[in-house]
Image (cartoon, rainbow, N blue to C red; front, side, top):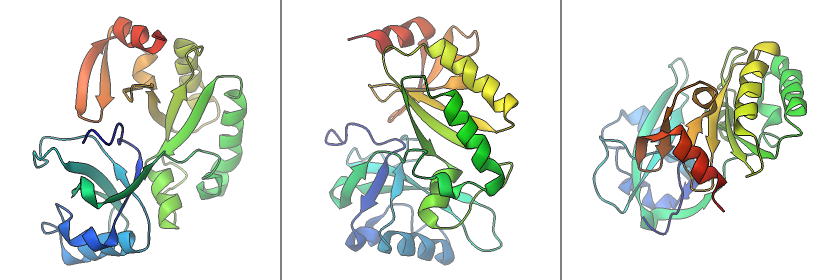
Length: 225
């Protein structure tokens, strides 16, 4: 999958004519299969995810996720795979500004307060998780107690330790359930909550799965020209 330099958290559109070839469809109930087919046919994107041990080992298969939202059924995430030739395009995650209308009304002012507090940091803030699926699905997957998953891309002059601590403080001070990751230029990411800790070894998330790296190495790679 060299043609896809980064796919985790990215929006992935596939060709409607390729629906039948999606790996994982045959193992799920018909109502769930119909949800996937309708989603793709309506021109909505799936999301790239990390490779996991249950995936078929074909290197040409791109791992994708889709959140099911069926009436009177709990939310459920589907793990799918599609041949790389079926991909129409891959695009960046949605910015938090684009999805503002998706937040429950009780959250909107809190989110604006968060953005104001973070305005001086050289970062780009995008979203994944329930916020994203609510926006793309056209109906709320969220409640007032839902997490807001932030994908934060910092510029090299960003003080990561200060930002991580600020995010942890914000979550308590403005009563928002914030979660998420720092994502670096090499597409590696790390939980900013974990980064805010004193851990010397950090769990790094990549397209090909998780791995452990020393905090020193993570910072060294972040600062590399």
